[in-house]
Length: 620
Image 1 (cartoon, one colour):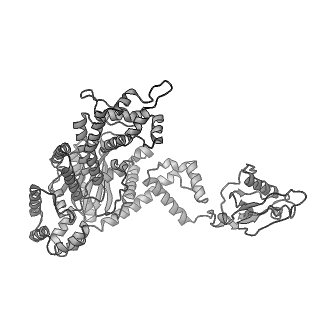
Image 2: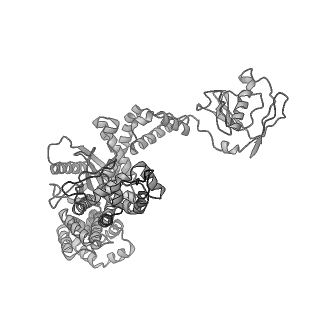
């Protein structure tokens, strides 16, 4: 710490112009800055710039710093400096009091706190400006920030505080040259990756805008640890059926990738409600359904059977109870009534004050959100009862009578517990299937675990759903058997027969011999099993001695469990509605957005890139 005493002797007349302003000795605790040939003072205590450096002005500012008052005499004092050089005063200046000025108290502060880092007021070079503009454009696109925010005064003020000499680009420049530059950059990156692979899987997801009919189809290309956005199609004006659209989409994408990049498309994963019929007309590809979609259908089946209500129309904020007149009021209808009651501000505030949490409302995009509502009720039941016991000035409960009765109804509480026990295992399966690191081998193992541990009620309805949606198809069962960790340990005799028949269909003589050795876990397979259970490492190490089987295993284990990543990424990208662009620019914006989001996850195939274990993430 250093002591600065306010001097009161003035060398020269401080009112005769800028030349004589430098002569007085009232510069204690100020930093002299040269701006365009003129001297500017910066207070080392509050960092305010003072362009009028006369004795009276500096003295008035010093009094403001001491007393906390507002004595600003110049509206331009806080204006950012365009270019400045600094000269730090580290000497202790002092002077005796004069008869014309009474003594003032000393000021104590640490000047090193304000002079340790240089001011960010230097002019940017053209290269630095271009780099900042590009990073800003990536942030706006990847974070789904409306481009109109670029013209916001508050955003410009924020940029000015970070870098005084940086001027953000205009909206027209952001959506024009910068968007074109990023689009070309991302397309070049995608092309570079495509030239490094020989095979890939198509991921196709349907998504809607504002809860309407299917209007868009997004196609990704998937390889070990990497995804590339390939194409997006608007089918809102299409007259053909969805299977025909999917078949045409697959054919076009397959031909495009094969002709342009020489990449073989061998499988497709489609997010659609299906039964035992083929997903698409194209029969030369391995076909799998999104396991996350099947899990959502299972939750829907459970609610329909055990609650007697339909889940086609969900509630959104504000929470309104639903009633099915044909089947009466179900468990979830009563639960939604409680949610609606405790979303009232004063009750929600009381609930949080008692250590509870805000009500988790169900949403239209995730079937496991019912589980979140049920979990919330069980966790906060005792607190809600405590609140329901309170009365107002008229000695009336602050909670509605029917809600109070439900909170003390043992039959209703038990029905909530039973429904939660049915849905919770499915929600866990949903979360695991949505992870982008998991393959169809992992998904089949999740389904086998669910059936093995399920209660009789859940087992019956889950078995029916697995049969209707063809969960245990030959591709999923074969992938499970070829996974070095699972090795088909939970497969039944009938399921193993399906695996063996498929292997006889796909493998040549050498491949079948390798398959027999793998089943017995002899030779190199015995050694590799003791070393690693990661499928890509395992089969790449076995490829030299068992080329045919290893190549097939690497392909089938590459097929992901679901396409949930697409819906999660695309859900915030209704760019034509948000920014009112034409179709061409909206398509480019969507392609850049998807590429940035997907590349952000690149290279983390064996880490949980979807993040978090909180139950709130289950319903993504």
